Length: 473
Image (tube, rainbow, N blue to C red):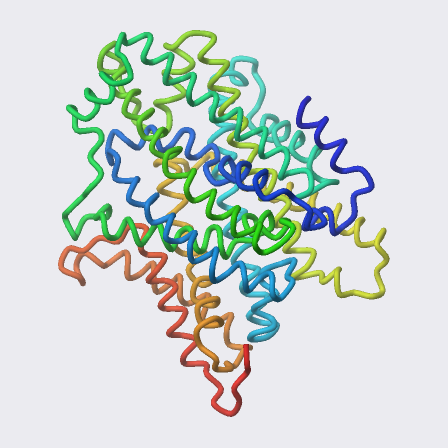
């Protein structure tokens, strides 16, 4: 009800400018705080705690890489976007290369965000299905429809103008739920916070560094993977950048990014600590660890911690899911509206006609998400966060290569061949990953596959250089 109240207030007299960029009036501190929840999502809430059992605290090296990535976004990408006065960040590719590059970049974003958002929502809806809706006899597809219907009701009119404020509320609920859950675990196990920290360290659950260079969690790989994951999944992602572009000025957007990067380190550390306490709890009370690590937190919260803890878990989980899902649908709608339908540049469309087209696209995107979630349920066989980042390595890699070439190479290219390059790049990356252990002395790719994919795209663009002209940036 609170979300709908915020929506009613913020969506009054809503225009396309309000939907896309919040009229560039969003307070930077509200955006920064709300983006904590959007950056973490239901994936962090469930998958990262469960991941601790096999990867310990090695994920923290990825988080340290995030900080480096946010610095690149703050001082390289944000000034570019603001100087060009962009609504969709992929318009940069049109200005720099041409239509084919523009459409290719926007297409890869839409595919990336559609898959990523659907994975995140699936994780949450699946938990609700297993522990509530199955007991009530409600089919999975109905559960998905309810979930997406609620998001649509409060976001389709106000867009970013609404979401920056609802994100703030959702982040608060998520973090409060996290703190209360840790307190419940400490109370039921009988340990103080200091004792629990010492115990998790003694059991080896807090190990951060993986020193084997061949391992997919080798700490240097993790750091640079985190850096480039942040650059592409935040800096080259319309979803995350749309919130930054809604700030009043470049300076405010930069303050937002710096603040967010600082906050995310302790928040992720707390999530990892929660994961360690879950394994301590399971061992102390002789509870079998589920085969799928994503199921550990829901299992303990809903079956063992008690009724009040179960309610807290659901509040935190739904808040985490909504904070990323609503903005993802809005961002994909924005990209379709600007990058493919060009409604801002079409002088034949009145404001009312533009809004009607945007409404239709919003419902179309919601339908695509619905189909993707339902299909994904049949193939969920590993931790969602690992699957999410693996797919991101393939779909965001071409974006990394395109933007890097556009920023750091002044050459003009044969734009019409760009779609071929960005399609071949993920294919070659996949083949390299598949045979890397036999070709590279046992080396196994992890999240750094994203970097390789970007390099392959960059190399492909070098082959397309048109030496007859030089196009200034």
